[in-house]
Image (tube, rainbow over all chains, first blue to last red; front, top):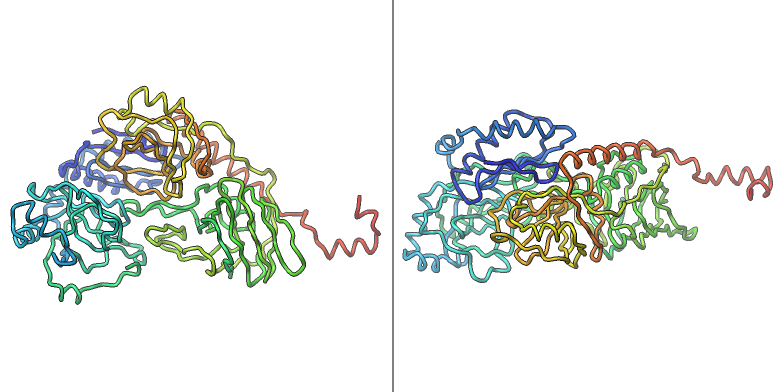
Length: 230
Length: 330
């Protein structure tokens, strides 16, 4: 564990250098502990797989005070327990077909049937390790090792919005159309980012637990939400 | 209402940005030079963080459907075109734009400039900010044919700035890290000793730099962690990328150093072709510089005063009728 300066207006508390669910649990615990202190001058707290970065105004919150608070917060170890008892959010996903053009390839690469891949995904508790890359883009941990596939050799120039995808041992859902090299398995009808909701513009936040529920194309049409930016 | 008649170069509506949402992947955004934004606003009688138009290279052509007071912070060629003819408008003081007159910002010679209108510009406000962030369609788009609502301003008084601020040269000061150890000492020496030139790939997200290639120890890729405006990422090709206001919230390239807060406004002026150097400072020096910059801005804002030199034409004509032309030419 170490504290690193990201310029003079941000400090990073680093728990490790790899993708690590245990490190992420400690990150979330530290985030919660720091938040509870309600320090004046903090503008943003950004958790990642392995670190917590605090953006702040050093003219309002002295570096030494924040350092001390972060080192204390780093000792918190409660998040893992909290996460295990958290109620999962259900995320409907329509797998395969035009929504999941890589499902067959992923099934073949892992030596399972498409149905087995879907059943396995729906049995998992996926946890939101961080949001990044794009507004509202969740990096999800909790995949079994056999679903740890490298990114596609040639990234797509346009991954459709709402695609559910996996790569590099993680899952993700694209809130926006964007270039991307992950394997597309399906699509959710949910709106993932809504700027009109200032309280919670992104549907998912770091620390959330998600459970995937397979739906049919008809159910997808019925559940489809219409985000402003679709 | 302000109508955008033409806009040949990128311009956008910016305010103090969108803090508080970076954990959800929403960039900070906001003015590249928040100090000049504050000065433009002060000259227009607005709070320091009201939304204004950020311009680079050249600005838009605008027309107002009502009398308005505006001010420009920056080094620009600007003029007002109306039925009474054309006249140049100077930066760093406020001017009146009459209904139907056209304001043309022909050239922006400083790296960036701000146009503030009394009452502030009321574009779409989302997640606490009117700043435009293109990739997620946050804040109002800005382009020809669009209109911007001007907020209520009462009867603003013209103002001017005592001393025109300059953006000094000199190396950009940096704090080493967060991943300084991912670079050899030779790369570190090249970074501090070399001269870099801003490349063509330069926008509000960041600047790609040409210059000495900075080699890594153990590869360029890291498991993504948070980045911030001013952070200097170095991908595998060894060409540094300096991040700016619209940068993503996390990044997967090793960061050799971070430009200090006091020098970020200056960094916001860099354009393709701009030469940059870097100098390492301690945290204590960075904080002292930040305090000094805040004090200097405070002093500049305090020096914004009513413009008593604005020609009052009615009074001038009246005076001439009584005193003749001698006094008027003295």
